[in-house]
Image (cartoon, rainbow, N blue to C red):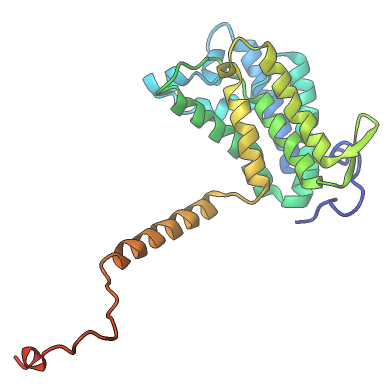
Amino acid sequence: MRGFNRGGGGGFGGGLVGLESMAAKLAVGLVAFSVLYLATRASQGALLLLNPGEVLGRLRVWEPFTYAFIATDPLGIIFGGIIIWSIGGFLESTWGSRRLLMASVGITVLAGFITVALALVIPMASGYAGGTVMTTVLWVAYGLVIGRGQTNFWGIPLTGYWFAGIGAGFTLLRLLTAPAWQFLAPELISLVLVFAYVRGASPKRLLLHLQHWRLQRQLRDRSKHLRVVGKNRPPPDRDQFLN
């Protein structure tokens, strides 16, 4: 993975990339769906948000996907688009388009599905907009990729780890003003997922760990039926094997 861990990092995401890039397409998607939501929020726009109870009760399976591209206010749309385009462009040049898509959309959607699953056992909020979730994921991932390398936060030089901490800190500050943690559930879940993803976790690796654990368990179960033969044990009667 090509990163800035050893040297100095660039500026905030290293600048904007071309419109043909995956990062630019994600940014355009955020702007387009957010504008569509604002234009239709009095009617069908709510169907674009994540409502865990509706996903389960009315099988609105598209909501964990569409909510990822929704920001509910103009500042969220503008800054969200810039962050996705800029930081996403850096990550795309480091990871490639496929891994950027897995990190940004994949983690955001997975956090949505986990929120839906939690609604089966505890009361959850409704009307989640995932644009903030996606931008937080990319922000934290950018900082973790740079690591001890140098970047800047609006002209303030700092390490990538501090940059990631600032992104996570925004969520924690919002948590202090939220009525309950459920209102920020997808965002909180995404922080755990993006840290695990950048550190190498993946569905394939998880499956390998599960298979390894299952094999080890089978071997332990079989070993319980084995007995050690002592040296002083008398030899078996050979006649019993003649028939």
